[in-house]
Image (spheres, rainbow, N blue to C red):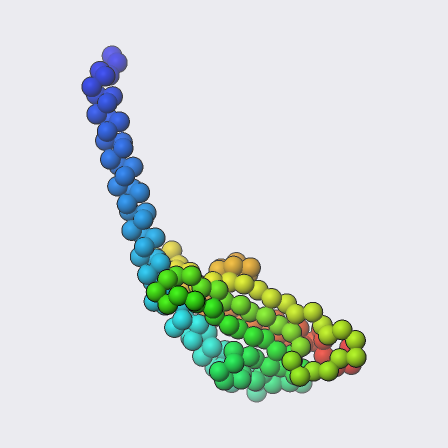
Length: 169
């Protein structure tokens, strides 16, 4: 037996109401995520800097013949030999989730080269909320990384860059 026109119309109305509820739920979730990112991007960046300092202190005694890492306070610069990594969080509007974390590797700015200096390597990421909206993750050119993973990536990539461009190469 076929449904009556009235039943079909009622179902359409119910379906529309469910769609509106789902849309409001998604909007609410996005607003919660945006608020979380706004509140936590800068503190997570500061945690990244702190984690880098801690890792440098732990790894320096055991890196053998490699030059030690140096974290230059207040500049976002990590140096190893004649190479540096820079980290910079650009968050232009404090109460908005918009942000951009720039991570770059290159020669130290005071190095002098007779030929062209080595090309820098740059990555762009941004702070985002994880799926459960309880932690910040860094998302972008490198995929999705936790602060701990990003810290290790920075030190490993700086060492790779140094080994590729160390003096005498």
